[in-house]
Image (cartoon, rainbow, N blue to C red; front, side, top):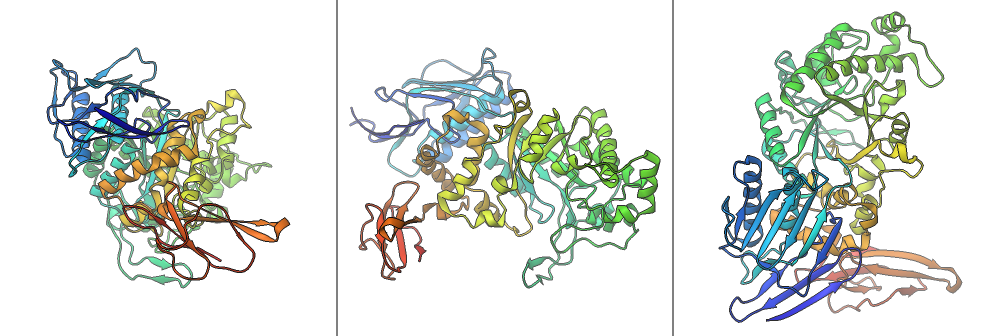
Length: 612
């Protein structure tokens, strides 16, 4: 048997090799260094790999429904990659098996140990959850060979792995634009692929109420429909097409179960007391003015919010959240708390009466209206705590002082998370500057630079002391859908940036390396393509950087791609192709030129990159 392999040395190893044998034919071997990068990978390159064939079986423990389901997932993943259908069984006799087990001696419940030899794969998790993450690694370690006259194999070796953070989240806003149950499930599958364990589901907005509340049926009868939608910010053009949609409670429970089967917790968000125009249009008596109100058709922050001094509005919030807690078993219940203007509260007799009743005073840090919001949120927090849950909200909750036991989701910057940690409150970092995948400025950044902006974000600030750092429990990316109305735009914005996100959530900082990440990225892009995801293709384009060479009165022009593809360029205004000059080193330019470049790959050429 002849072995050929190419090895890339660094933090984690990029490996590809082909085995040839007169009996079995060619075998393509994958790579245990997947995304997110496991904490420890040892690949035994000199040993024969484990080859998948139709006789391979997947073994799981008897009388364990979760493990049986996980075995079924692994079987489906292997069929996706190789086209081979494997049997799942509780019969552990013989070799040529992938054996799944729970080993409680592993110290981390979400951790796993993977041992691969030519005869068997042993995958043990600290819990059923750990086993699930182990099968994600196996899936991503496999080469995609279906339809090809080659066999697929996993390299011999050992993986010891566990997550850095307990909270690894992603948020989808369905308030601005509704997405059907079938697509929400597809998003959950994307999260599972990236070892993300919390799906933050933003269910209500000024522009639409998307969850059935039985005690308040008008929320979906009226609040889930808007007559038109702003489609151009500059011209203020509307589409004049009604937009509607909501999830019944049974559909929401179906989503919860679908996620739970993949060890993902669905965190529901009912955003209040701001962002409530859809609710006010449905029940005008809940606002300060009594209306009339209409479901918002444009984007932004609106003055009309729930009345902070109206006991009926407070009871409404409690009633809604109790129904939400009946649907969602999540330990976290997100109640928003962001972007709640106090204009109406300052003018509202009920709000001002409540402020006087509570004896709230303006302080150097907090206005009395901000403190009224803290009271409102604390009352809701009591309802949540009484059900054994934890209140989660955006960092504006800090403006009036934090309610007891509240967890802060820090979005305006990392400052909110820092302040919460110093107050000994848990915080989740999701800053708009790095982790808002719908941020228009962010979306102007192309290719590897877009990934680098995510990848280099460090969720735990150095300015916190060691005691305070423990309160940063995780990090999350968000996708807001003001300008996102279909799956094509969703996936274009989140992929492959979700790959970079997964590595800051899962991998310890000492095992992270951006260049190494880029070397591992093609395998993940192959999975995206195989699944039909509409990921952002400019990752394949040539990046052009220019730096003035002042001493030489010239400009240095560097061209590069994330995968070191062959680059051809022109400086004379003509469109480059494979016959154009080959880029080998930095260009020195001493006059005005148009630099155009293209990457040449066997699977197809990139788009032309251009700069003057």
